[in-house]
Image (cartoon, rainbow, N blue to C red; front, top):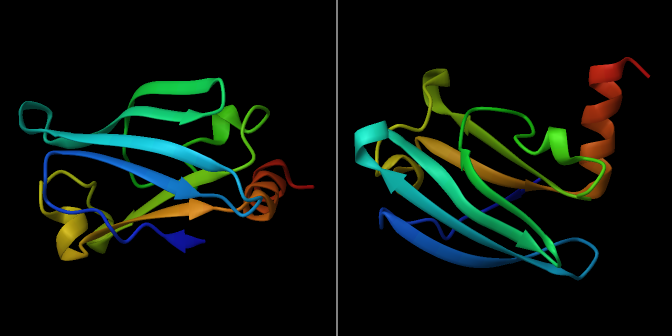
Length: 114
């Protein structure tokens, strides 16, 4: 797991992240005060795009896309509280991780028992 460290308290952020296979993804996240939460406005890798996914505490928020993506995103927060404040990532209360392909496989095997 690679920690995505450059998340600030800015309500709109765009980042390019390098994957373990050398390719990159574009991640655009936004804090929406009326929803008390952070959302993935857009996640793009090649011609695959995900829009409008809420960031929640989860070992792999992208698990449903595991047949299309070779990476995952995990979020963990202090006291298991969902990331609901604008400063959660910049303060370290919540941490967003980029999962490698091997970690996605490992998590899938844990879920399926095989």
